[in-house]
Length: 135
Image (cartoon, rainbow, N blue to C red):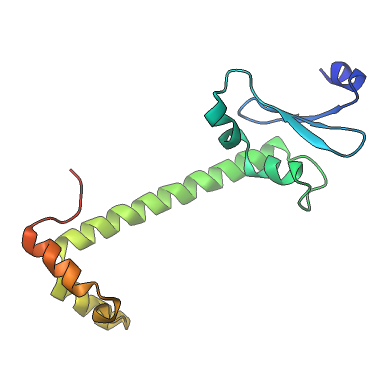
């Protein structure tokens, strides 16, 4: 694969997990050839952050190593799981507490809910029976 691209003047730099190919030209420019079966909308989202940084020459001299990409993806997945877990926990907590209970909790944490103009809005939601949660 490298010989073919060398003849065109560009050097093969690597391949990401999405199947995109990355190249560096003798001038120092860096380019990507997207996987052929991607739809136009998917193209921009198919480039991992490590490769974006390399493409933009943002303090990244060498292309990312596959192990580095794997570790970054695992860390992103772990962060996403944590965010989703926290969101579920917050939704469950807000469903279980009345506005007065939420105010008492905020008072303990040093937050004045009335200053945020949310107390009346929350009261209206709980009076109407709508918790804002979707089934």
